[in-house]
Structure formats: structure tokens, C-alpha cells
Length: 125
Image (tube, rainbow, N blue to C red; front, side, top):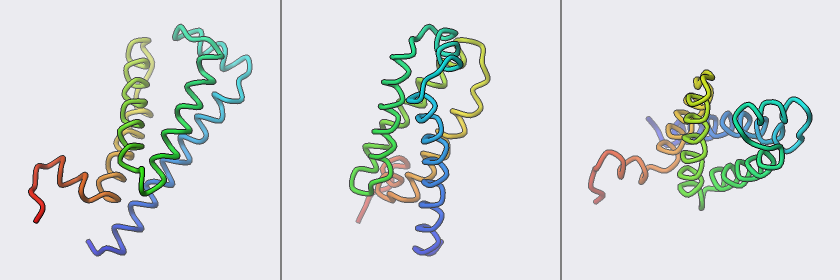
């Protein structure tokens, strides 16, 4: 794959992840009765959901910025791992957080080749 193609694919996946997570975070930050009901179903308060939304935005911002992208990848992986566990623990479908988690890692490996080399154990020259 050429460098230009890698750049386009990496940033396209990053944009898709950003749209999904921005929508998710905005719902958490906006609040409302539906959010309070959904939060109560998993044992959280609306205030806790607000802070989770902030954490989501900060992690996403770090993921988007190239200099802090690897840190953002790790934070989003942890965040989405928690979302997956929460969904499974409460008998809810976990497809969406799993799909977003996969997109985050694919985008990260494409955008940050050193991360991909580390994950597969190849030595750099």
C-alpha cells in the first residue's frame, strides 16, 4: 500500500471513529431523562455519565492529534474495553463498542506504523 493510500485510509477511519465517539459523547454531555434511565440501568448516575463523556472527548482529542495519537489509542482502547464489559455484564449487545474498538486499532496501526511494528514484534532497522 502506498504512503498516500495509507494516509487516506488512516485518516478516513479516524474520521469515522471521531464521528461515532463525538455523537456518543455529546449525548452523555447533553444529559436528559433518557440518558438518566439508561445510566440507571447500568448502575450509574447522570453526573457520572457526564464525566464519562468528558473522558471520551479528551481521549478522542488525543487520538486525533498525531503527536499524542498512540496515547489516545491506548485511552480509547481502555474506554471501549470498559464499554464492552458493561454491555456484556448487563445483557446488552456489545457489537457497537467492539466494532469501534476494531476501527480504533486498525486506524492506529495504519496511522502509526511504529505501533504496528511493536504489536507484531518486528524489529526496526
